[in-house]
Image 1 (cartoon, one colour):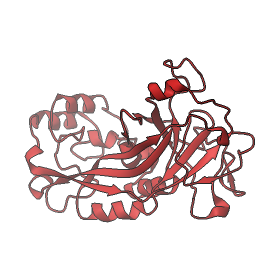
Image 2 (spheres, one colour):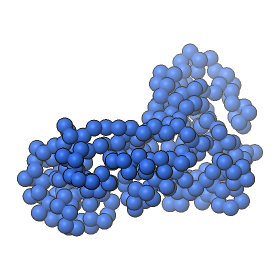
Image 3 (cartoon, rainbow, N blue to C red):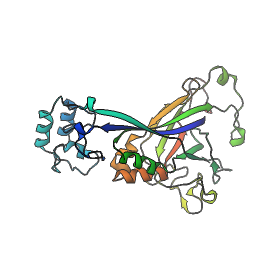
Image 4 (cartoon, rainbow, N blue to C red):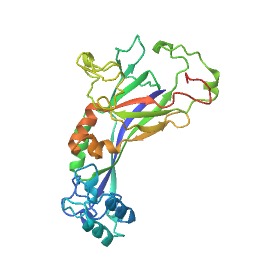
Length: 297
C-alpha cells in the first residue's frame, strides 16, 4: 500500500465567555459545570460517569472530569451537582475552529534480512509484516500551543492520509510476488493502522535515522525488532483501522487520546512535545485478503 499526502488536523472547541467565564480558555476548567463527559450537555450519561467513579482518585486518568464541583474528591456532592444541572448545555455558546498541519516527515523500515538495518527516508509504502513507516510532524507542538493560547480546547485530532496506489510486483523490496490480474480487476480495499511510539527519532539527521533495528542509529535500539514491544517501543493502543484504497482515497485515524489523556503525558504541553518527537508507526492492517485467497496479499 502506497500513501501520498498526510496531514494532521485538530478540531478545537471555542467556548464564549458567557459559557466559560472570564479567561477560562485553558485546558481546565471545562466551560460547562456538570458536563463530566465533555460533550457540552449535562445529561444522564454524566450521572452514570460520575457514579462509576465515586471515591476514585481524581489524579488517575480522566477521573478529574467526574469532580464537577472541583473539591478534589469524587463524592455524592458531584452527583447532586450534575442532577441539579440536568439539561444545561452550551451548544449555542460555542463554535469550532480547526488547525491543519501538513509538514511531516517519514522514514521506512524493513524487516527483511538484507534491509533490517537500513533506513528509507521519505518512504510512503507499508505492508502488514515486513515494512512499516514512521511518521511525525516537526514543529507541531509549538504551532498547536500557540493556537490554543488564543482560546479553545482540543475536541478532536486526526491524522488523514491520501491513497496513491498498491504494488503488483514489489521485488525490489525483497518480495517475489508476481503480477496478478485479479488485483487489477478487483482492486484491494486495505486499511492503515498505527501505534503511538515511545521513542524519539529523526529523518533530518541521516546518521541517526531509524531502522528495523534501532530508533536512533548506533545510539538507541528497539527492545523488539520493528518497534513491537508495547512497554518500551510503542504504546499498546492500536489506532484505526482506516481504509486507504481506490474506493476510499482518503482515510483518517482518530488520535485525540494522544493529546488529551494522561497516559501520553501528564500535561498538554508534555503530550504535544512527545507526540511531535515520537510520532506514530504505520502498518497495513490485513495480513490475508479472502477475496484473493492468498497470504501474500
